[in-house]
Image 1 (spheres, rainbow, N blue to C red):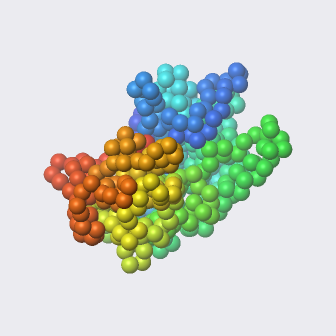
Image 2 (cartoon, helix red, strand yellow):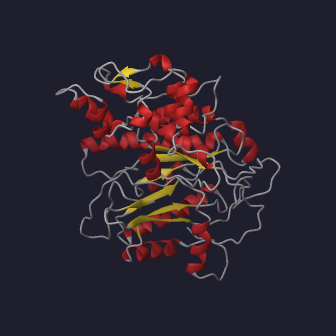
Image 3 (spheres, helix red, strand yellow):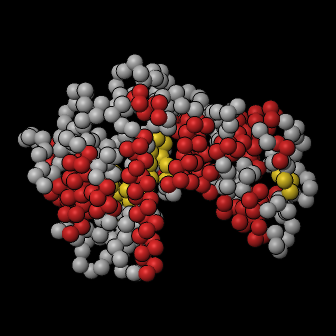
Length: 435
């Protein structure tokens, strides 16, 4: 295939500055979820954890080279800095340049893998072919065995996506917005069908490949780390309930590894976009990640956390506490009798502490000091549990009383002067949701 890239005289580092900055709004990269050892004839390996916004045991930051192949785009999405109508500095890599950067940075121990996305150059097929050529060259000519996450281009030929899937560890396709109406209004060149079709293709390919690997152990792996997607939060007036319902549907119907939420950042002036005088809704984004974690690991469903009557979270309270104070009829629970799934629903009790409680009470009757040693966050849990039928403090079991006390805790997120909210990533989300 002849590569007709932009005719410019930029050197590779100038392109890197432009195209790494252009990729910063795509948050759909995380730990690899895949394990692959070096076979001895190539460079690097792939480990399950430790990629992108992570720190190793000795304090090193280990991450991905996160870039766009090009920030040129034929689409004119109203929320995107790289839309065709914007007058921004444009640049495009060649496959050789991406390979050279990846290998050079890897050898310097700057990165452990590559996250490669792109604007749409000429057409979806043309762009997907360039991404495939790049990854093929990196795997075959450069013998790179490290982690690679590639964006599939909606509307591209399915054969190109399939070929790329046998070279990448993870693939993702951004849903962008939770409703068809919002997509039509803010991204008129995109359609829900074009986004979901390759998502289904990848899901089916992963399933078929797993079955094939049962019979043929050495068959090539297809997207072994699974697929993910991203939705923009706060760009189209959507509610938290709508976002959660869409995310739940994607997990159930497409077996996604992860749905990412990106707080809308207003980079363009357009009457169709919200004004956001207080800046990007980063605290709301944080709450969505917490709620997502509850759905995936704590047994909650979207319809429990929110409803048609209550469509948004109380941003001053984490979603688990928000749910608990609205369902006080289920509390308090006796810590020495409640089953594991019930324990998981108690604010202040996480997956690890719930397992420790179940194990510890086989040998003794637990009291509040024991729970503190186990790791339960008592300043939240105390409102929802009893030990030996008792609670150490006199309290009113009302939504107003418990809600006020939970919000007043200094470690809860509150609007206050000087408070800084920041873009979430997997590892922040993971540690802050526990309990």
